Length: 338
Image (cartoon, rainbow, N blue to C red; front, side, top):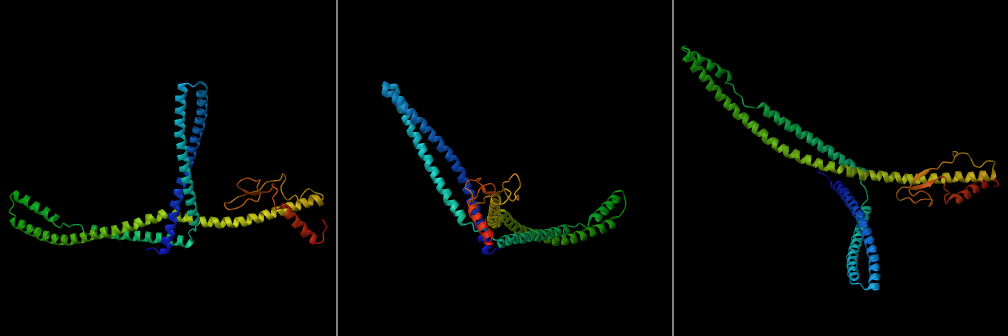
């Protein structure tokens, strides 16, 4: 039903999702192991300190009790050092797994293109149509069953027969009428049996058809469940591409904003030096600070600014002096002396 390219895209998405889940589990384990290592290190430090104290006491007094206490502390220290080494080894193993898995995720981060998403949504729509079709077919078979229930045309004849028997019991001589109605009942029963045999076959066929249709319905319903389970993963993978494209555009614009603000600040410094004001007055007073978020993969242009910030207007950027010289050069090229 699904082409190979689509199957491959879905498989890659599921692998990435599984890898991310495993990575998160490893990070949680790393946090636990860091705590365990820290605790073991503290125990080792405390026990080493105790061993030194017990050793000093024994060396001074040569007390047998001190010797026993010293040996117990040394044994305890050996066990604690083993536990510390084990914690360090486990932590190193987890960190190596995290590094390998992270590299694997990064390497496979090709993303899902919009064509795969469109095909996925089209497959869901096709399966929904199949489900509706099967439900309609099953409903039609149920209607056939409802229209072919067993018939009984003897109800009124049997009631009339009962009245005739009652009249005979009360002394009426109506044997001929009874014989006639019994003959009609027998004839009607034969007719009903023949019709009901045919109706029973129709019902049986309809029921068998429903069984077959239900199997197919269950199969496509399971396919729909599988596709719906993949949908969030596929959309997340595709929208990540959209986000990365937006981030790339943002990085270009942030750089332009940085250059423009640098130029304004450079001109402000020229106004202060060569004009009658301190600055252009374009920036609000008191001077405000603009924060441009630092996206993953972007390098900060100011080492002294906030950790997750690309730049801020009140920070002197490394490129300001260079920008100032460029502005001065542009103005001087017009024949103006600064």
